[in-house]
Image (tube, rainbow, N blue to C red; front, side, top):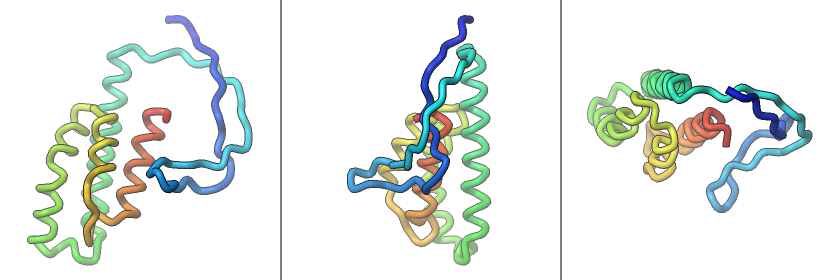
Length: 128
């Protein structure tokens, strides 16, 4: 497979944040040229699937660390709400996971801070 050279914007300062349109904004301070060998479809699938499983593991760990996580009614409702996201993450459909996260309502366990963190992780994985 042929190498591709492209310019990558680097965020070496500032914290990503959501603007008024719901898009992540980074402080861009420099650019560099990077040469990469594109992944095969099989490598990309394996990478996406691995990322999705790790994302769901982090989600479940974050649930356990929540001060009200052991309220079974609240925990159960959150897991029910996240079933589609979990299923798609486990098969590596990270673009759809990112979209579904963006439209999932927040609650006392699934806070806006957690939602933003998971969306940013997906965006970073996808190279957006």
